[in-house]
Length: 343
Ligand code: DOR
Ligand code: ZN
Image 1 (cartoon, helix red, strand yellow):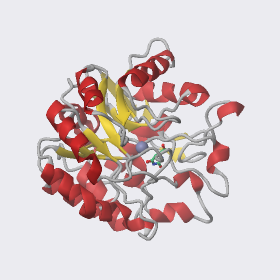
Image 2 (cartoon, helix red, strand yellow; image 1 turned 120 degrees about the vertical axis):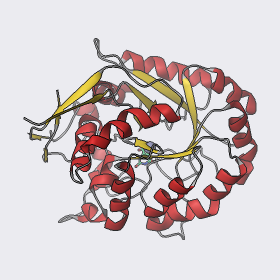
Image 3 (tube, protein in one colour; image 1 turned 30 degrees about the vertical axis):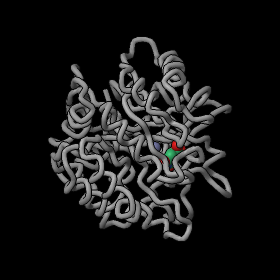
């Protein structure tokens, strides 16, 4: 039987929420990944070091006994963030980045940054204190076509941010377009990107296969096939600027299957399996370890993991949902077959 053994991977972008949803989803991430960058878009957002440390404790309590998992905390950047907090975050061994949400861009982004130029002094402080800036790169302009919002954000903001803060480490999160891939490739080694499994496996047709498919709806939204191909090429290229970030973003099934369904694909239970499918589709399984286990750690200046994880080529059915009635969550690929399984 075909097997694949790689160094234990990390997830450089995940949403685990709080309360009942946290308890349902966290074990899946902890089983697959040694560490994960935890997104701070809670209600209310995680904006201070003290809040992040409390949130970290709640996450650690949800780790099943016997699993060794380290949450890497981030802070939500707002117009009220101070240089003192940036300095404090940079000094904390548990805080690894700030997340910039343009106000209104996505789920729980209303506390985000409305005027990006006004945040430049904060970017300068992050550059000085050497803490990375993670960016949701979409403009929020209602007039801008939703499929163009990432490309326009790069032209309107990101080019200037990278030029103005050359020593600021920037991660363009969940890239979805060939333009984003090109921008990251052309930028300095201080600029990197995460790529989700859904953007590697699906194009925008998946949103409308035989009817509307809410569990494939996330932001940035799936794009055309030409963009998916550019993402697969980047992820499997061996270029250390591209690394694994699932953007697993659980919402209850009722919040997704609604007249105004939330954005976010819940992929945590099958994340590595999905990446293996994507890499295998272009005969690049030998590039999965760098993407999943090395590039992100190197960028964040953290040690690579020890230990390994093994995937077997076995087909199995993805459950229709996870969690109990209080927090039933439908995964991406529910009731469909995945062709790899973690041992
Ligand atoms: O689809 C998404 N869901 N995109 C985001 O940027 C946020 C995320 C969430 O928190 O649900
Ligand atoms: Zn996200």
